[in-house]
Image (cartoon, rainbow, N blue to C red; front, side, top):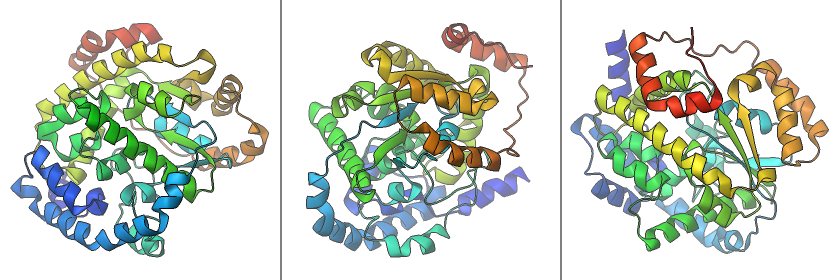
Length: 373
């Protein structure tokens, strides 16, 4: 059954990079040493679709560029950060029920520099999306909240998502896209300008509403985010590291089957998960001091699941966000719709327990977690 699933994944040629420009696609291949033969069909799909979407990008620039450049982001964004598989998606979807927010949608990330032009084709293109996310069975909605890293992968050669697309070059992609290590000043400025342009595009498309962002990769981009949005509010969510490890390994393996353009070994994936967590969290613990205390709130995932409304009230009070009462009815509806959702159940042996404790004990002790039973 597993082998049949792997074959099915390999035959799946649709890819979220279909909206990339041909020029960026060629640069991406050069920087990451091409694609493996097994994924050749995916590469052809991206190449052909990048050519076909070129007119839309040109028209988008012609029609909207001036308006987007003049757009002001007047309201300080609310930014959800935290390691992957720590509950960022759940918190993002819950807070997005508040009508004062706008957010990045999956549609925005697929075509970051042409989605307004291609809006009439959105329903048709949605037919090519999977029904559920491969790592946790959460429903995929083309208009649902998503992380901007998907858009970054389309408009930049450096993105965490490229770690999944090009696993052989995952180390360089991780360091350059998340920690900005090894980037020249010119590359950093270009990356930052592209990011701001996309945020302005989404703000323009949503008539100036307040941005609600969620992106685990932003956890160590705090200085850049504060430079762009000095009054930004941050919500950091954390979860039992033992479960984060198991969930991240599962996510990486399942997503690679859908997104990879190169082969990856199980051993290398496990090594990356261990090392990336250490680097991400140690970096964040240093950088969080740059965020004003009244602009940062820490949320424990287990508390959020146990009493979500209590934790939401804590967020709104600490960050001084207005009109929670107006949002509560929609939040309650969302929670009611999720009441039958079952989180993944994991078995964890002593070998894994020891590996996680040996490498991630600095967070286990900080947050006072115990190994799951």
